[in-house]
Amino acid sequence: MASHAFTYLWDRLKKRQMAIDSNSPWGSMLMGMTPGALNASFKAVQRVADGTTIITQPESDETSIRVYDIIITTDKTNATSATIQFTDGTNTVVIAKGDSTNAPVNLAIAFNGRVQGWGGARLELVTVGAVTANAMATYEKISKEFTDQSFEEWDKKR
Image (tube, rainbow, N blue to C red; front, side):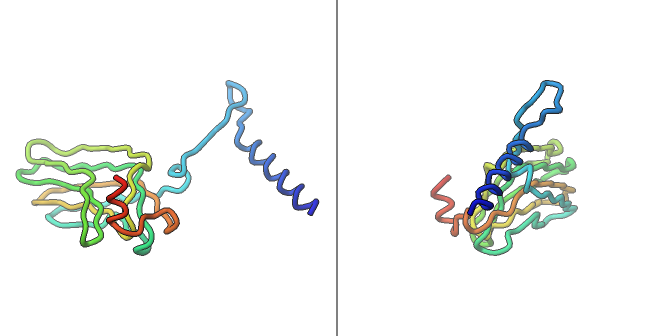
């Protein structure tokens, strides 16, 4: 029992020491990181024609995707658009849509992890028309303990 208590205290002291940087020019300071900075992944996709590309999808219907950042770029082409959306095949929610008829789309959104899909919802890039579209998303896959299991539960909270 005593060795367990000692180990616990030692671990707490080491973590506290690691969280304080004493080598900075301003002296000691506390450093923090968001869960997204520690756990997020990214994926970039490109479409050069009308259609849909999956950016990322959860491991199962019990897990979800939390979005941190999205970047969309397109060329200027008449009667075209690019859309980022969550969908499970039945329900669809548009996150961002850019019309590239009059000007190219250059869109960057920092959600900082405040946008999360429901259980089983994948993140997609959908293009309409013969447009070259690029999209990049930083995201985190969320376990079932922190995921709303259905679209209906998720939709009630927003």
